[in-house]
Image (cartoon, rainbow, N blue to C red):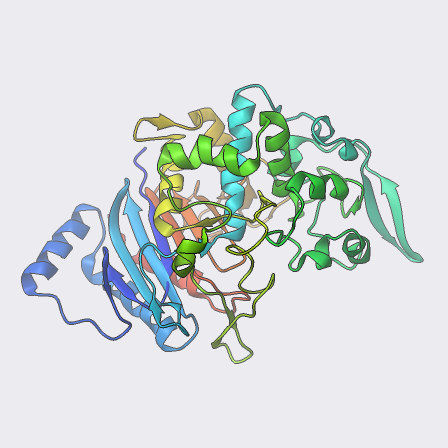
Length: 434
């Protein structure tokens, strides 16, 4: 099947296929240039006229001060058909958004860590149904917190948590911020004590030490009985370290990012590249953006932090180009440009529903690392078989196998009270006429 890739990153500078301009309206292109663009878009099944609507949509969010900036890139069958950068990567420093701006991708890390796990499954070092306790002993006898009329009762888990439970977020493990267990997690440096729960970039201990401590805490649902979004993929990052004998950052670098040529995807940024990292903003009470504070709930510690904790669930930085290339590998059945990362059958486990109705009863499922679209209309105009996810800083992505598209939208907005992701997705689909 042909597979296109769509990538979007939002900012305050406008870029057309690599040409950067400020947020002011660009000068009209010459008739010859416009005709060439129209021909190129038509060849890829997109209407050049309809793609201009995307320009207006992205620019409006910047002009209305709802986002500071963004980057958008659309690939079809691996070829770019649309690319824009709008707004500012750092408004206060007057740095414009560009195609190579680096973003905190938070939970988009999960797909890459899942790929690492499945690479080890293919080698026979990890079993999909294998108990997590084989790698992290504190998970040998887990417990579950149950709310009762008189308070909270801690009961034993009915069965061991398996690797598959973590891959589908059905292990019953949250981020420890729910009232049922929050105080217990905070007492052990997790949940509320970790800022946003998922955030570990400021931690001085390796991720396995944190996850070993997590295994001694109660979870919020029985294994296999509910979809609970939480530390699952961080646990898997520790499993990768135990099974491979190397730190997670090294495994991902040597087995995934370097072979694929992803030069800007890493857990921490060297100080010399500080200015490439977009600033984090937050949606204010009136819907307009304000600069987020320093620290774990804002700018984070991705440059000056301890560089000790490699969070497989939410720790990576990347660019739109890098992440799109990773997704193109997945869309292409696990290989790209002669480099094979996974087998096609393994990729199918990632991109098809493996959790039944536990994730959603409205036509969405969850595979190994990706949310899946099982019914047309369940997620906008995404086709059946599409898959994707997003991150806490506002980044999002989607691969549409029927439309041969991959879409990634990266902004740095937390919390994000806009609907820019949905508007962008709709804008892409409405421009696709073949």
